[in-house]
Amino acid sequence: MKRVILAVMLCFMSITAHAEEKLPRVYGATFPSSFALYVFNPDLLAGWNGILRDYEKKYIPEKYQKLPVLGGWYGKGMIPDREILLKSHLDMAFLLSGDRARGDAIITSLRQLNIPLVVMPNVTLEDNISMFRNLGKTFNMPDRGNALGGYGEDALKKVGGMLKNLPEKKRVRVYMAQDVDGLTTTCDGSTRSKAIRLAGGSNVHQCPHEMRESIMKISFEQIMNYDPDVIIINHPTFQARFSADSRWKVLRAVREGRVYFVPHEPFSWLDRPASFMRFIGIQWLAVKLHPDLCPIDLPEETDRFLRLFFRLDLSGEQIKTILKQ
Image (cartoon, rainbow, N blue to C red):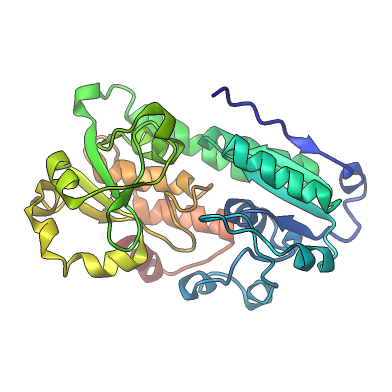
């Protein structure tokens, strides 16, 4: 399907012209949208899509923890309450759209509420780079937008440069374990698994083209057939349960100590949701898959990322804890 998502900048030219005025209350329609608004400028964010997890709250000042829960479009059919949105006196809505059909439905719903809307694509990491720069233009904060977008651009160039001569046959075969039992995964070639390829891996799970963007439930026997080189675990609950499930010990990745828990603080570094956090996530994964080719100082890079995006000044021990999750 041809990927064409137009950025719709409606009704808010005055934001650029009058930056000194009070910031608008902006509703992020999805988790990636709200997370992007928060790191760009938390004072823009009108509310969260869901209740913040305890581990997320550790990195978010109390002022922003207290923002109302407005709901959003996420998961399997979750949608916000129309009345809550209408009562929230929103100045604007912001949508990062990764799926055209779903995005069109969200756009239709928000337009019915007469909420001015900005839409930007959220398919590739390049989209996230452009997104921050466009937010900078929209809200007359170009320095902030360029700083965040520039970091993403540098991260892609750095990892790409380190892996530019990697032969296809040297790509590491990766299984991404999702959900509480690890038996849900993403398809090779999907938007969700792009980070694996960028980091020098290949997703072991192949799907028919028409199902490529689906989240797939598979059997443990199928994972045994794949016998991946590396397993990356992307769900905090399964991270806690994994070592107690003896079935997984028969797999090569487990025997060779190549099971990695995806960091999920402040937000997930790779997926669920797929967001700008992949700027640091692909660097982390590249080091895990190809430590000989990617000599990135992860504690130092994590500190740099969190200072820039989240305005956090963490201790070395706090950063080590994030990386060891």
